[in-house]
Image (cartoon, rainbow, N blue to C red; front, side, top):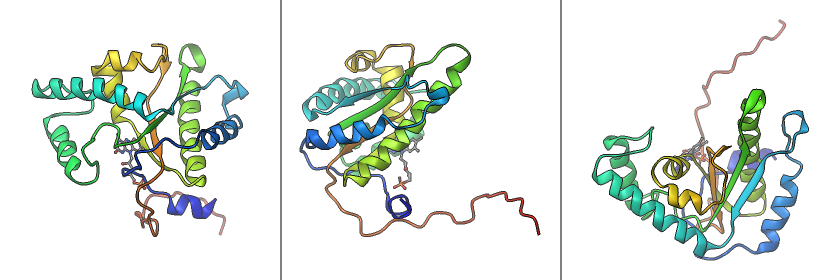
Amino acid sequence: MEQLIVNRRSCRRYLDKNVDPQIINRILSVMAAAPTGGNSCNVEYTVIDDKDRVKEIWQLAYSKMEADAKKHIYTNSFSDFYYGKMKQSEKTVRKNDLLFCGAPHLFIAHEKCAGKWAEDSKVNCNIATAYFELIANAFGLGTVIMSYPAEVLQELAPKARAMLNIPQDHYMKLIVGFGYPEIEYARGVQKDKNHKIHRYTKS
Ligand SMILES: Cc1cc2nc3c(=O)[nH]c(=O)nc-3n(C[C@H](O)[C@H](O)[C@H](O)COP(=O)(O)O)c2cc1C
């Protein structure tokens, strides 16, 4: 587990190939053990495991996003500046696809989000997302957790969102792109070792 976490990296280059359904089934059966608040087990998983279906959703969402950008209409967290940066990244890290990072498959954890347990519902989805990412990597797949395309589907491209068949009252903040990685990384990255850790240790 330590090695997996230290060496995991986001993948934005994939083989143009569907992942073996048996591997996806194994990952999803492991996911049933992910914790949920009060053991409610209400979190649902939507998996687009056919790359052609992902392409259909992508085409609708990407073309709407581009048309809106021409009118300076962006998602809540974006602007001319950030969109310009993302567009530039299509020449480098997000080759030709700032939206789904070229991922052939999508995984979305979502849950009806209402009432006094609404905050737990959100956390359940985010835990499931993190678990999925790690388990998929353990099976040798590449993954990228993405919030931007979830925003595009929610805010700009309702027709593309409808293709997911996820109810409107479900929390859906993160999308995991996954597939067979085109590039194997030789090592992990060293991140900021000075991030804040507050310890209260008896001396
Ligand atoms: C909440 C969250 C949202 C993210 N959204 C995006 C995204 O929309 N597009 C993208 O390419 N990467 C996205 N990422 C991936 C981060 O950019 C990536 O994890 C970070 O740069 C660290 O790189 P690493 O995953 O290789 O360690 C997201 C990650 C998280 C945790």
